Image (tube, rainbow, N blue to C red; front, side, top):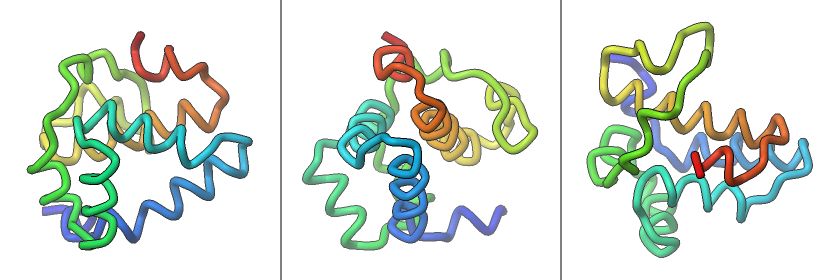
Length: 113
């Protein structure tokens, strides 16, 4: 089991925000991406942040967007579509979406519109 599985989503979240704000994107855009990916509403997302939910529990409670299979490419040197562990793949889906936002990709493209 990977160490990241037991890490709280709330402990990584500020790093996503910092990365995006450094590139001129907003926390609201990050939330839009997370809501799209997980099916959570803003209140549920905030609950997970406040409760310091682990990545394991965060994604266990998510209702992943059916279009996640369209998220492809390399993150941390690995193709996301080839990751065998379902939880690791879900975490990397989120990483990939954050990276695409940070690189200036249009929101409709990031959300596979």
